[in-house]
Length: 132
Image 1: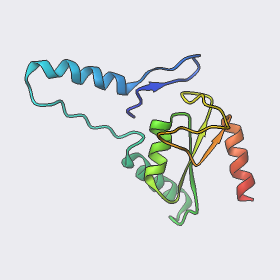
Image 2: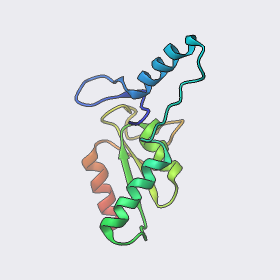
Image 3: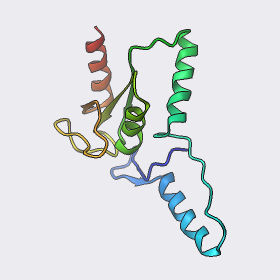
Image 4: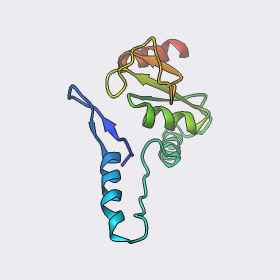
């Protein structure tokens, strides 16, 4: 799973995600004097997630010559950070309908997106306009 500390979907406020669970588990593990708890995270924002997505897209398209691959998400720390870290051809688009609530005229300060759109349909329409 991804390490999102917060997530939001169909509920009016963000909730704790897997990242919060891992933090708690590590804190509970520590007092027993064992070696640090080893955690293997493989979701967003880790490179392995974006490499796997690109590999799958390459198989479906039967080529790997992508001008752009768009990551649309509502969580700057997971979606945007992952796409930005993946580099070309990835582009991050932040939507304001989940964890991020800053509005279209703003951007996340720690993990700024390539673009910010209000909703998913707006992001898709924007991509289609740019493509064509």
